[in-house]
Image (cartoon, rainbow, N blue to C red; front, side, top):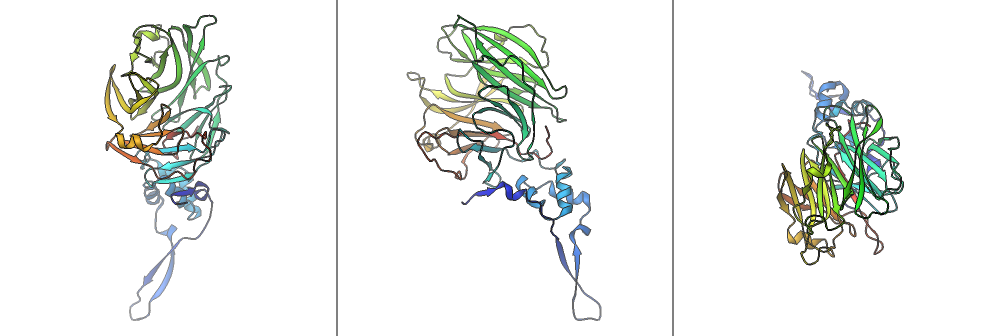
Length: 403
């Protein structure tokens, strides 16, 4: 199928001979002599590494098949240090169904889908969070199987079980990788209803530190009239998570709010609700994203008389405690999803946001730097039955990142 490439073909190890033919002219001899010169003798290692660093990720894997030396240079990770890793646009991985982990990754630079096999999960029914090339998964059933992986190199690790994961009603997952090292934090926000009180919900924040390989419960608070949800993100050292109104507390038109928790000052005893930030309007499928150290919210804008039906999709950026709308999906793209209800998925990284309907494979990307909307190439898999669902996540393809 056009636009589809098997990722496996980029991982084939082939030690072939790459040679260049140069014509040597000998004085007094009209006939040309041809010498075969190995490419390895032409390019010094530092220049070869520099050249390879400017290739897209998919092309780097193809280059690894040229010869043994190129393979060793690429897999030693020298080729991507100081190169264009930061310039690589984020990819989008779409699952082919809700009962499998099979799927394809979309490269917006080459506009191609790659058959990419995830290394550590068996089903798409899981929580997902990404940061700087790392992807964190948490199973949706027991919520005690948490993995961190690099989907490009297939390097992965299972984390030890976090505390307090029994009898939960809601959970949110977030990961943040350090800027100058491979250290990272994983945060799980858990919510469970207080017994015999439908207005009170106990919210806890559990933090995993990869350097110490341990969990710590840094905050627990009982919320009244509010409960935690399934969405969270870490931006500039602050954990943000959406919470939802469960009763007539405060403004009855406010259905959601934003909690902010400073991960650097974990011992703070200030109430989480004291820093509640209202969302810009009544939203459905709200998703928080860290886009180049900016907190961005994507959500469906609900109709006033029918809050379960959306009339459009908006994008907002948080400045201090105020939301600023930076984009709204044009109506022609909104209609392009076909029969679009209030359920859709969105995910972002770098300067890209991807939006898709759960009931279809159409994928729309928004480039914040260019302020441009664009459809992806057609997904390689078609919908086979009416209730088949599709979802996915956005991640940065990186070769040098390890778990």
